[in-house]
Image (cartoon, rainbow, N blue to C red; front, side, top):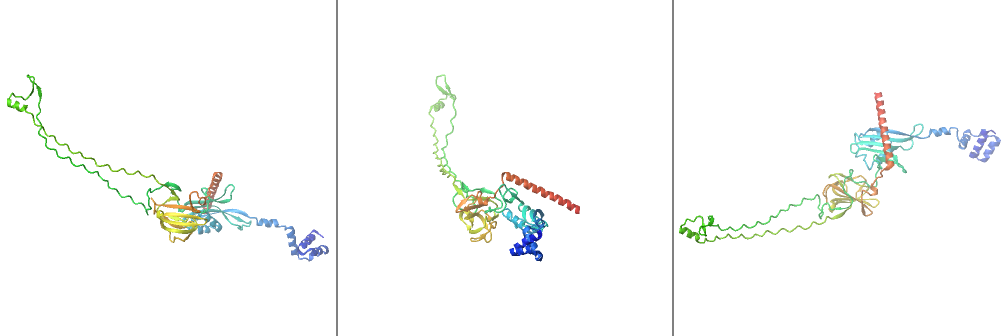
Length: 433
């Protein structure tokens, strides 16, 4: 029996059983077996001659593909028109959810550049899922926003913003798009330094009229003085006595001069006027009060949009003492966020309303105990207020050290490659024209 017959017999034994295999080997009835059945059994046992070729025909490879264009009515349809796969569009939308809203913050005239990688078979058939490699959006509303796929040391590949901050939404977000903190979390002086919860901006205090001291009474009028005496000059006479230089030697004149002159009445002294009593000294100013500031004060113009920090249910919305127009949202995981000094609530916002992260819920104002337009924002975790700037659920991972250096070099290479492609495209377009 030749090798082929023995192989067929062995294959038949696997397919038809040991008895049939023995008959095929001993009686040589292989030629009577269906040829296709025997060949199939042989390929199962030993493999086929074109197995390598068939494996290579399905061996995948990956290509990076770039797409660029100008946004029409909306970004997502424009990406689809540029033949960007739907999985890449969805990945970019999720990665930018905490930074940019595809619908509200992109519009006609904005530009995009996308690079993604797609697995293919040898014959060019796309397989698997396309992945975003990097994306750049030049928007009117938010400026240039970019994403880059990068693997940090000891980590997995993920998308990062161009500044080295992890992309994607966090458990909580800050409620304003532009953050300008005027007062942080912790003990601070009372900015109003007065009790009471006035609603709205504080009014200027009423001016206090100054009290003038009483005028002293006029002094009493003095009686008229007699005419002044004529001045005299005295000297020594030859008789050893005093004499008047006007002595003429006439007895009558000298006699009159010898008579004592009448006393002149003195003017009475004016009565003493006592000065008015000095006003009492003001009481000492009390020491400034310190109190706990349970959140962040975020400065913004009145009317600036406020967005929900996370998915949740509004549990309060209305006037609330020093908070002014106040709102509270409960979130999963025993988290609560509080918003104070609002000028108005978004339409439909009331107790019991369900909101999503990033949804418009109100507008910045200056109500309650407030010295200027701002938003007071609090995070309450398990019943205790926490510092929003250090709360883990609101912070993004940031690349540092060697990871950040490698990331910056990768970003530069990507930009250089994009520019090189643009130059090549310009040359080709010039040749075609």
